[in-house]
Image 1 (tube, rainbow, N blue to C red):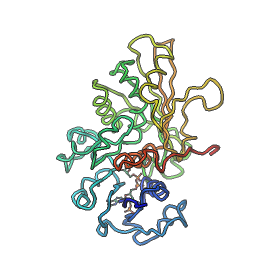
Image 2: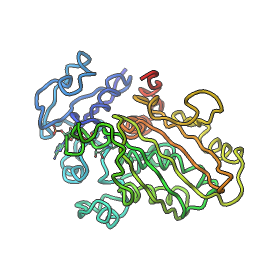
Image 3: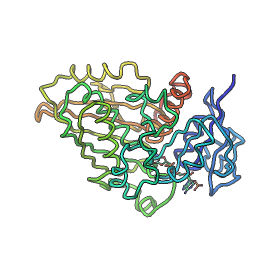
Image 4: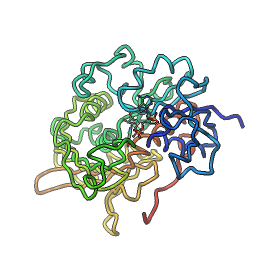
Length: 350
Ligand SMILES: NC(=O)c1ccc[n+]([C@@H]2O[C@H](COP(=O)([O-])OP(=O)(O)OC[C@H]3O[C@@H](n4cnc5c(N)ncnc54)[C@H](OP(=O)(O)O)[C@@H]3O)[C@@H](O)[C@H]2O)c1
């Protein structure tokens, strides 16, 4: 069976490493090259010890990239736009995991990322890579911008109840619990073990960058003006995001109304599970048991006391939050079964 050739720019990072882990076992993809500046010519297992003995791949430089069927870019924000001209002639399909091409408007990028966009001409040419809300456009896309992890779990959790008109779209509060791998593999003061261990750190009570992406995408997909407030807290966990989203129903709702909204939109989705159980320990979504998997678990609870609808969403930030969704999108872009290389659960216990 002929396989498509894929290369990964930024293969030594956390998102790049997760892409390698997935693509090594993808039946229709062969990894051609992976890049790193720091680990040039070193085997991938040096940086990603979970991949030792599974591949002969060594890191190469961006300048030595050969033409491929698809190139993934997994660089820190602001770098994809700088190298795009160099990458474009090498592959018809480009999948960017960073934030550079997620927003449609350059002024929004400037406001939320505090720098001028170098390639505003490309912003509307990239398709937002979140299959559950944008599958048709992904099928036609050559250039894809995968969403941010916190943004994608928030969008997935909110999309059905907004689409079905169940909640007010200007009164949404997203309380996001974040993990340490979300900031990437570069150490910093805040990631230093004595400072990071044991934290429950409110690091962005307001003004989280993903606010722009969540509002822009939910407004586009639901054809309604959506406003959200995001508060982000760092927890002592390596992988995972949990969002607890407080919303205001437009009318008195029952559990059945909310179930119906999710079922109508997500009943055929292979990676979305609605979790609301009356028994057991894991009665609501929990990132712990999603580690390594591409599932997004979503739950809800109606607060009759205050007429609130509380939504709960959980993902593994490195899977459904980036590399998993990128591979799911690749499957769609190349006409493969959407679940190829991704249909496995997380671990339990972990
Ligand atoms: N971590 C997550 O949970 C997550 C979730 C969603 C989206 N993302 C997105 O994925 C992208 C990568 O994130 P990450 O967490 O994997 O970051 P990371 O661990 O810091 O990895 C960054 C990668 O880029 C390379 N790199 C850094 N600066 C570079 C430059 N100026 N030129 C060329 N290569 C450079 C690094 O390798 P060398 O230094 O060896 O060259 C490394 O391979 C980001 O845009 C992020 O927004 C991450």
